[in-house]
Image (cartoon, rainbow, N blue to C red; front, side, top):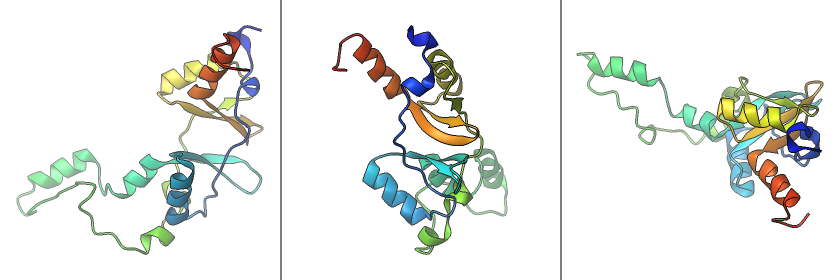
Length: 163
């Protein structure tokens, strides 16, 4: 079968780690460090995909306002300085326990169905500038498809690496 017509289910990774909305920031960062992954699907108790959490969500904790708001604040004559440098915030150690995945989840994500073709999945990756897509079936997470998964499949098919 041509790769363009191959369903995502043939190449996707079914062994995936997920987090719950109730996972706290400390647990999330520990998991990211342990697995060297920067993105996790967020699922509920029925394995329904709720969103994605990644390092960008963590970075947003350190950005109290957008760049445009920062520029406006800098121009105000009665404000001494509005430094939006990510590393200059005073943080509380309690943040690790108090900030939950639910606070930083990205619910605006792109996914594919396990019946979609690899061609369609790759098109979506390019269109949305992502290297990994959650794979769903009836709103439930059934796998993840990464650009690396696609390359490995192609390399195996061309005997570049062992099948």
